[in-house]
Length: 127
Image (cartoon, rainbow, N blue to C red; front, side):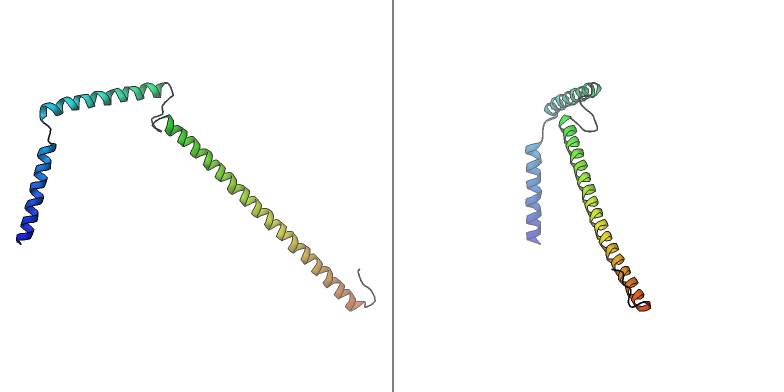
């Protein structure tokens, strides 16, 4: 129990020391907050002006973000084209396989017809 109280007291006193050291007097913080508010207002005004002339779109947040979005769209378009080409290659391969199977089927039907004709007329052959 003594150890717990000792650790809790040490943590509490460390927290109080940190808060006292980092505390800013009201007179200093008011000046700093006014400067921060002025900078924030100037940033908002600049963003409005830039978005009015089309340089900055608020949705993207800047020209760099706009370029990133444009590059991302180009990459997506290329990936979509690659996927389409892959699908077409697969489709061509399936059509080729289908044609081969149809040719095998036609040959099998011709062989069947020849066998049937040989049954009814042993001296007559197709080929």
